[in-house]
Image (cartoon, rainbow, N blue to C red; front, side, top):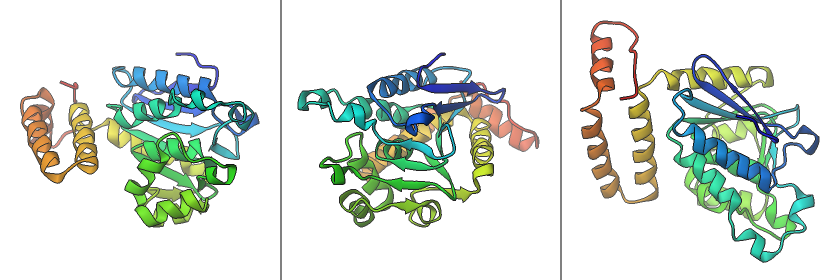
Length: 259
């Protein structure tokens, strides 16, 4: 696949490295970027060659530094109702493949929202998260007002959304916004190590586990437990389950086929 605003590399493990590639604008997003992101994750969701996805940013300064303000200042009320950002990040959250954000710098506005839509966040020491929209007379509009409080709690989310407080890489780990913090040089390698571990798991199991965890998190525990049992019963009928148990008993690495 070819993109105007992103780079895509897929290695032999099936790890897709999806890189925001507008370093001259600190990888700021416009509607074309959101559309390309939505298109990629719609494809990755079912592409057999993709086992896991890493999202990162080109350049030394930014992961994704929010919206392109030169475009945003021209938007009218009706222009926002299409929800381009929400659609793209909804694709990330619902993607059947695990998604890791490798946050290499500023993750402001839509960049922060992109990161928190991913399943995992690995950050470097220079990473900075912020939702500065209220300082522009706006609010986060790509799901940030919904996902952040579920991730780090209401009080901390309001601190970031209403006050626009910035959170660095080390603090992001402390408050549950990120999984781990490493040096800038180790960032992508660490994300690939995580992705490699995820790619080695049973793909059907990973897909269903992700959906069940999210369903119970956003709904009731009773509904979540019912979905958990239905998913478990489905997995018990798969070839991957037979292979996983056989490999464990035979003390070898499993060879999952995704069925």
